[in-house]
Length: 179
Image 1 (cartoon, helix red, strand yellow):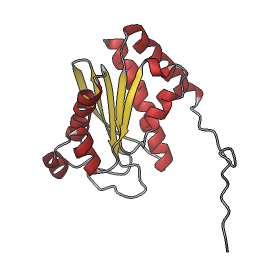
Image 2 (tube, rainbow, N blue to C red):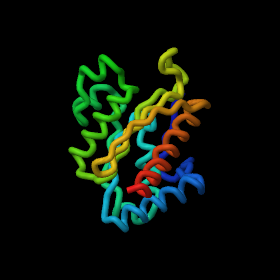
Image 3 (cartoon, rainbow, N blue to C red):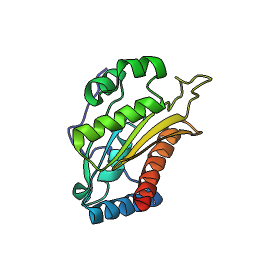
């Protein structure tokens, strides 16, 4: 039995899109960043680049979106962003201190004024009593203001990831409006 693969990049292609509410939030974020002359950068784990995808879905986002890293493994978190081995051993990849250190690494590597980091357990496996499936930690930096936020989302893997992407972008907009 043989399998045929098409080299036509449009064969069976499903376009990636954002829902209208999230798209509107990204536009608000982009307009606010552009007006300040700021950039945003991100590092993601469980969302696998979904935040960066949302940013780049907006035409002209190169004016305000700098760069992103998908640091899915602990090795990537350490080697690319400088998360310490001690943090990962003591608190785990899904923790307040991990997303804080990820955010510091993003800032150091990008120089962005606004930073978001995401690390969580999207499921269906990997959860525990202490950190159930749906647990997601976010790290945010807005100039010198920093905050880490834990959320526990319900739903399947795709729903948890979508909730996390939406939360990250909504909170970025909120932070910009407060600063």
